[in-house]
Image (cartoon, rainbow, N blue to C red; front, side, top):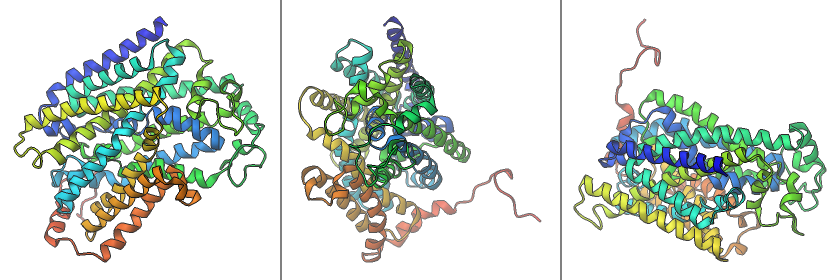
Length: 523
């Protein structure tokens, strides 16, 4: 217990000290929200990765999908690395950095407003972000409850409040730069932590091959999917239900392309070299952390005797109980590492979400609309105040859900990722690449995804069987948006040519680079 307490105190102390150290970088809007657009490749890549993966992935998703799909759940982690990280950086990184600086936009709604010449579009985007990021923020605390209950004799409410307060201190003090530096440290902890945990868990089952052989013998009578009755299905390449597994891969991988807290990381990139280096680092980080989490979860059924199984084949206490059950037999020192790992994952994502929410609400909704005259100092002050508000709301929601039978919040958490990514992915992507995209098409994409995902909460039984799952519905919205935007754009009023030409002129500006980056025209 002393070792665990000391490790936690050191961890929290470092986080707060970094926040106070970075105060000098958070005196204006550009510094507070984007770190002065001077963040290097390692910090940017780790900020992207740690914002991507939280306790929701480590405890919730890894436990749930590992239990359902067995070792095939690892495909979700591979998809996160290749589609959610590698391809996202290659397709969005450079263009996002160039156009957002040219348009002088610090948030995703501000990009929509300036790129499509529509203030109402900017306001609508900021409202969608405000509504759907709050429940997502509250969900970050869920994974902590069981782990803290297992490792410490501390009330969950106290844990949530302490984590929220400490995160708030370093974000409010140092803004994006403090978040990025802390994300780097937290990312290192996540890399080493997940690697150590996987080795320890597999060793407890006799090693990788022995664990895989045991998994192949697990009864699959309660598994769902077209090949549920096949022998050894949980140790197979694609698992018992490849169609629904594909929905998981699409939602958790392609979703990053439209999430404001993820895309805004590209706004702050320092240079061309940072993009190239960041792409590699981010991809490797995702492969280890996400791939490791889902890979670990894939062996969850080997611990059925610890977690317990209900008559319908689900874990006693829900899917969130799977990973804690797998970790319950670890040595104390490793348990302390796991707790800090999950804290790191949760605090890094929490800091990113509250910074995104506060900056969006301040710059896109309050500035110029509710408060007419707002100088730089006042904008930063309001953002800091809103960070406190957002964290407080998320804490209240988390505690209400934990201590009562309220399920609505949990449902809303499940659809928030699908609603945000479904609404924004296509308009943002086409906005960077295609001159003919119209603001009407953006509106249709916004409305389509939010209506579908909200309907999925209240009238889920009316949906086709495949789309009754919020995960599949979210994946459907993302893919549908990629079709909706170009089709609607072809049948609606063309965008203002001058506005479009000005936005895309940034790509034609000439820059000087060394020959190691580009060959010259000399013969």
